[in-house]
Image (cartoon, rainbow, N blue to C red; front, top):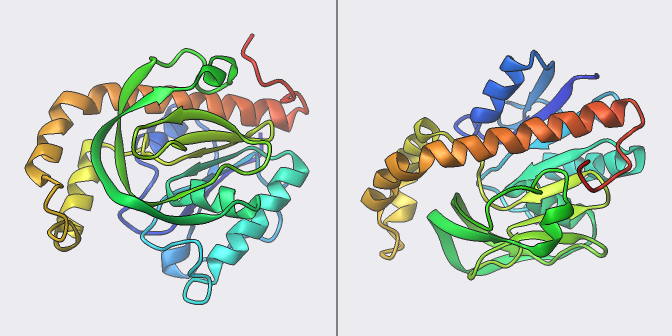
Length: 247
């Protein structure tokens, strides 16, 4: 399998538990750190798959962050070449925007541990087919998006109906953060304390307490999801990823 391309927008938003999966499976990867000035590749089929992580920027800030435009072009090239894509938070918004769907501010900031619900269509999805009907996830976002034309909603929540979707056969966007470990979350809370102070309904202590209650299950599901994405990428490398239902 060709290496997996990982696009990282912030130093403190790395691949988290996904990186553990890559190491355990001895899967080759190449990290593009846009915050450090790394250039986004201009071709997609040099890679077995794309993992696009989160970030503080918004998709419309292409003048300030030109790499966002490059990433959306790369996503479109990946779709054309049949290269699987997994986008997390900002990554999901980039997939939506690259596919022609609007991205915009949500009604509230959704930060902390929140319950999401599996859509019926997820039962036939390669990543989510046996996930619990309802499960806790870590959220940290203020924007949302409409589903791209032809996309399938897989996970929803009361505040944000488009929590996860599949676009085409092998591209997925997730608004929540299955990659985040407790260590990563503590780092985010420390770095984002000033931002969070502006939203009195967000309780930092409650989020910290949730690490003990929810981290183990969230990390287990996150690892499962990413292992399945790698398997999809392996099949795609062999020209076999043309099914949407698990066998």
